[in-house]
Length: 287
Image (cartoon, rainbow, N blue to C red; front, side, top):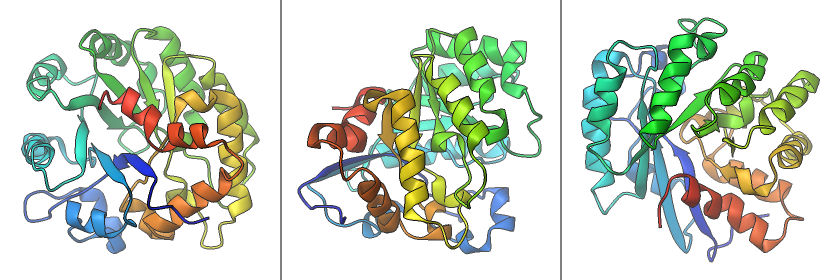
């Protein structure tokens, strides 16, 4: 099922980077992505649509590059030639300068949330349940910002505990909680995602499956994962994310979008519109 030109898309998860200005250290281990990826490259990677908008997602840089990323994000947000209408910046809730950083990012009204990747070796299991982390989540909610969680699937149940501890803060679960798209047993992921979905302050992104996919991933498995997410969260708490350019490790942005459209072929037009742009527009507060 190909994406139709008359459809609208608000992509909730897009990365861009200019290696002349900053460098994610994780690129050392991912040669296929070790080059510049610009907003123009992103636009070229998609078919023409009626209306395209996107949310910038932080790129897990070393903390010393945080200010440089913020400067670049502000340039992107205020450049009418890019599709970016909102951004999620880096933020470490257990950092000593967390409240100072919150005050800084609040100067840019198009910043909607913060993220700290929690599946890297420097982040121990259970980090998001540390008292200081939970306090940071509560502070974030008080500033009308949300937090995005990129977790190891084995620790997905921690999100439920965090949501319970910070009920006034919206949490966005990236990449469906990172289930593997390689034929692995997903029974624990299924149970844990259902547990997370019991908390109404959690929203789930239909994104990122290609980064955990085998080379021979199957559309049936994509459909199975998305169907389970819908049963858990309902249509109103799911939103599409391209995860470009990381998605290109196992396909392309178009092939990922086509896989999602094929998996949702029996959805009503209203439900598909909610997935592709309506729910993200509400979450990121964009017109």
